[in-house]
Structure formats: C-alpha cells, structure tokens
Length: 117
Image (cartoon, rainbow, N blue to C red; front, side):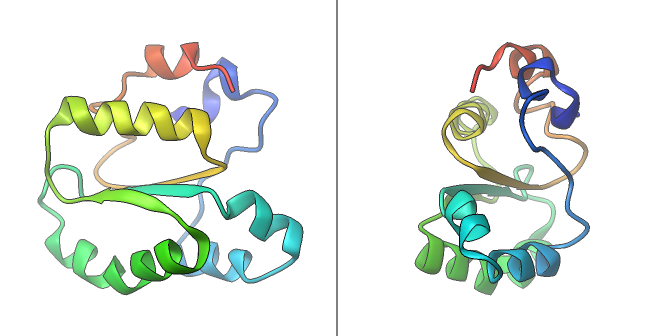
C-alpha cells in the first residue's frame, strides 16, 4: 500500500474510512483546509463502479469547486491514469483513490517507493 512506501515515511499518509469523513475534516481548521486545498482524485479507474462514481459525483464537484481539486473519473488508459497518479502523489497534499485494490495496477509499489516529495 502507498502509505507504507519509504518515500512517505516522513509524511502523514492514511486511509480514510469514508468520503463523508474526508469532507468533514476539510470543513474544520484552516490549516487542514490549506493542506487539503491541493487535492486530486481517481474514481472508478476500471470503469466497473458506475454506482460509486454516480454517488460521488456531487462530492467530487464540490471538491473541485471549493478546493480546486482535479481528477479522473471512469475507465481510461491505465498508463495515463498511472502517470496522473504519480504526478498527483508528488504535487498534491491529498490524493483520493476509489477503486478496486490499492491502485497498484496503475502505479506499481516500486515506483511509489521511488517517489520523492
């Protein structure tokens, strides 16, 4: 998993229990909002979680509008999604991944381990 990568040892990385939890935290103290104002997301990268994507659409729109997040929704080229994920892990304070597994099919753990931040 990403949070175990050596390049993130000095960073605060954690899995959140739900999107509602994330939104609640974003509405709290200013320093947390500042850290999370540069977020990104990948939702349903395989294209087989249509109900999840539909349910999250209003929240993703709010994150984009209120906090300037950018993201990918739905199936696409794995290599493009992997490059986006790699770039966002290096540039953004928060990255939200909603798909099957850990995202390793988009970005192998070896590449995550080599990321510097």
